[in-house]
Length: 176
Image (tube, rainbow, N blue to C red):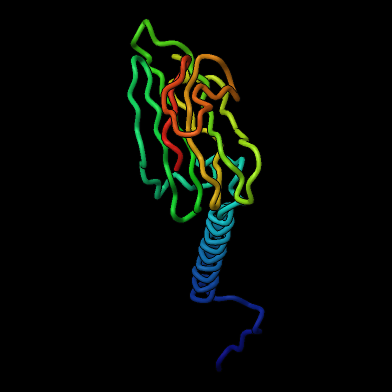
């Protein structure tokens, strides 16, 4: 005589399938969460004028950055970068951590707005021997821009004459 089991009763064989099925479901949910998390992280980007005033590192624009110009001076360097993906540019100032004669430098970017107007600027503030390097905020789109490093402070253009690169208290890249 055979014994019939109720469908709700479990066998060791069916318990194994439930355990494996549960484990697969947990793995699938974990993978879905990772995919959603990575999609939202990469979604925080900008393009062209929406990059203006934003940090190139946090926006991911530094991943394809092209170095357009570099100026090395005593105890510091000034670099000017452009990202094709973001269609934006920025300056990057580095101060030597080992040179006792290196002075803190303000990292500035000056630009002429796309539709014309007066020269405007953004600054990353001072870069000194304790933080070594900083990028300026970006300028996006078709705006002409130049990067500057100066001891005179944020927002100070050491070479305000249109194409002059070296002023009395700092240096600037060419206009790009």
